[in-house]
Image 1 (cartoon, rainbow, N blue to C red):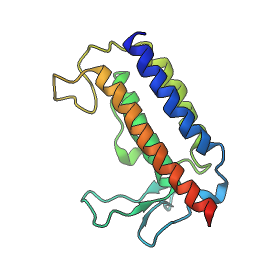
Image 2 (tube, helix red, strand yellow):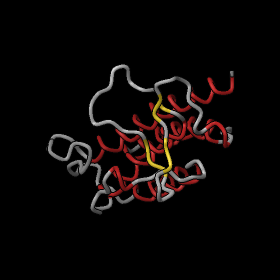
Image 3 (cartoon, helix red, strand yellow):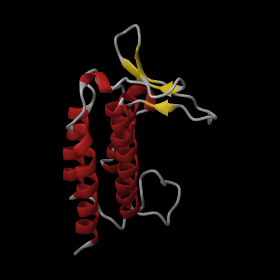
Length: 166
């Protein structure tokens, strides 16, 4: 099995775990707050859904909502795709949460990622998130996407399960 085939297999395994939760989400699950101190998405005066955000490390860390988690996945994945395709990466503030919950957005990002995987030189220097570290390669970036998606899938799944239990 090639390195790319192994990374793709790991990605598909991780995606299947996320899809398990995405398929079960209902509209009222997305913005449910599990704690008083939560990060959510909120509509601005122009109708855009923007995530709560703080540049400093808050303590305790706010508990994200499912909406915030879907935005977060879409944000880092969109920026990674920008880097991987040589586009100017978008700023965090340019990436808004889709009012429909973001499930289709994440599925579209998955399709785009699968198409991009076939074009990547795994031995090239990583354009993101280690663009200033010459020892990190595109293979590291692909493995990072898998790890980040797995972590975020578990977090989103736990929120869904807590919501369902209530």
